Amino acid sequence: MRDMIKHLTKTFRASALCTGALLCLSISPVGYASDNQQLDGVKQELSRQQGQLQDKQKRYAALQNELKQHEVSIANATKKIHQAENQRQALTRSIAKLSQEQQTLQQQRLGQQEMLRELLNTQYRQGQDSQLANLLSGEDSHTLDRFTVYAERISEARIKALTALAAIDTELQLKKHELAQQRQRQQDLVDELKEENQKRSRDQKRRKQTLAGIKSQISTDRGYINELKVNERRLLKEIARAKLEAERAARQAPMDGLAKQRGRLPWPVKGSVLHNYGTKQRGELRWKGMVIAKDSGSKVNAVYPGKVIFADWLRGYGLMLAIDHGKGDMTFYGYNQTLLKKVGDTVQANEAIALVGDSGGQSRSGLYFEIRRKGTPTNPRTWLKK
Image (cartoon, rainbow, N blue to C red):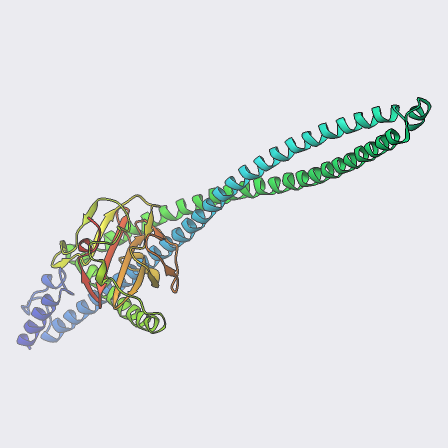
């Protein structure tokens, strides 16, 4: 019995599940009523520590879920802000154009008013020089006819001027109404931007608190390495799923892949490289891609035409987007603040697909960029322009 207890104790120590508490247990029968009591104590300690481990795992999973919710909420708010800002800029340009058109119409109106004033003045003078006065003065019929035609043309010109003035007034009123509507829409967008910014700030504070909780849960280097390994397995799972989607898409619209683009691809963002492909990440783990430092909110551009096959939050990588370029070639863009494209969208080289962020629990903003060929990571630096 003693030998069995010794064997169990050594096994529990090696498993790391009973670290700390089991070391305090003595193998000696001293202090125990019997060998069975000692074995029961070991079992109870094992059960307690297993329960603690399960509780810790549940808390950690809950914190990761909270992080996802915060970062997705931040992403949605950021996307609305981005769209509202674009609309506001478009409205500003439209308002400037309408204001210019309004000024032009006002100038035309002044011109028509001046023309009408001259016509009325001419018609008045023409009325003073009536046909009766001309007849009594001895003017011949040819001259009288000429005066009559002249008077009729003045009258026609006056009517046209009045009609044109009325049309200008109507158009001017429409422009004023449209301008007022667009200015109100612009103010609504400003209010919307303020509200979304406040919401994003609240989510960012909550995210910070959640991150502190996550870091306290992974307090050891080994715990962090295990987390990185789990995250990588999740990525590989999504890559396998994305490959199936890419193969289905390739049957519908074949793409040429990246084979001829080595050293020719544009950078997804311009910035200093924080981590290079192949360098040590933690423990025996190495970076499968590169991390480029960039301010939050900066645009992330696709490096080559393709189709979006993944656009979602992925633990460890935050908001990530993957593009299939054909022939088994895919690019991945992680840590984003928000995604501007969705699965199924076709994108072109240098087209904005996301905004730089620090999602996935990163300590600073930047872009995680990875290239895989037939599922195998390759050094992205060799594919980008020097």
